[in-house]
Length: 111
Image (cartoon, rainbow, N blue to C red; front, top):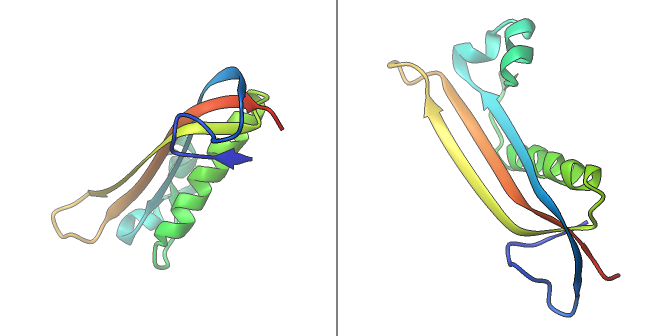
């Protein structure tokens, strides 16, 4: 699937706008990575006791975005926006949440 940050794709005609699509990923570090699986399921936090990889977080969010666009029967995503954030959860600076959110417009383009 073609994904772009621009509002058009040079040389391609947009045939149909399918709607907004979204993807997100969250990873925890420190004591937060030891939370019970039940809490993780409720909060959509995936814990990882190893080093948090921003590339992994970005790829998870991008894959979710693409799956969302495919569910809308789109073959491309335009106007991609990416937000990456780090949330400190405690005062000891040992627990963090890494967040990556993406959104764009799912479209059908000429092939």
